Amino acid sequence: MTERFVLSMKYGRAYPADYVNVLYNASRKALKRPARFVCLTDDAAGLLPGIEVLAIPDIGLRPEDWFRGGVWPKISLFDAHFHGLRGRALFIDLDMVIVQDLDAFLDRPGRLIGTNASPNWGKPDQARDAPEFGSMIFAYDLGAEAHIAEAFRADPQGVMGRVRTEQRFVHQCSPEAAFWPEGWVASFKRSLRRPVGLDLVLPPKAPAGATKVLAFHGRPRPIDLIRGRPYFWDRFPHLGHGRVGWMADYWTGNGGTIPQ
Image (cartoon, rainbow, N blue to C red; front, side):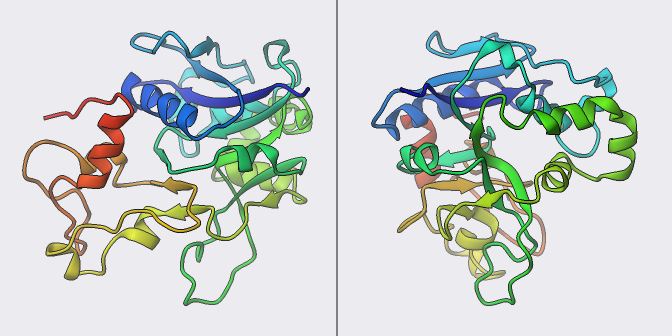
């Protein structure tokens, strides 16, 4: 039987250990069959005991490259060796909210399957753009997409100089990548946030229906919606503010702490 993995990545100070722990607990609840939860990180402090900790594979990045435009350390997920692990893997960004049924992502056939991150993703009333690979949640067979890491490792500075983000580079290397069915991955900003003005009096909608994972791409992040003091968490002209009850319930229900 093929071994299954849920992968996450944490480096630097942008995301505290709480994010990994919440993702771990939420993932366990959303899986009916076993999967190993692995965090690739440079700092394992505060992570729960059930989380397997591995180093981020070396793909030729300088220290300053880890924090330039694009999340370039993600390319290491395609390392040919990848700590000797083999099986079906589902990578999930730390600022994703798990709603239900991660088995569906791991069971879906395809060499490489990601989120459609085109500009009109999550905007059903607008014309469809050609799909673009998004790396916020994607599935693949460990070691099977090694050409992506090798192409990057051959010229890291050149790649980062001509390609804006790591997910665009993955798209260029694997243009045949497939995408999750419509509605599986919803955008908080595009699907649940209230229209300008209405967001001053109504909280954002909770995920529902076919949504399996909720994406918080860019700002706000999940933790911004649960802080314990009055504040605006959105950017003008949007006026989202205060603690969002369903987000706080998700966070604390999966072991997270609410910052003040």
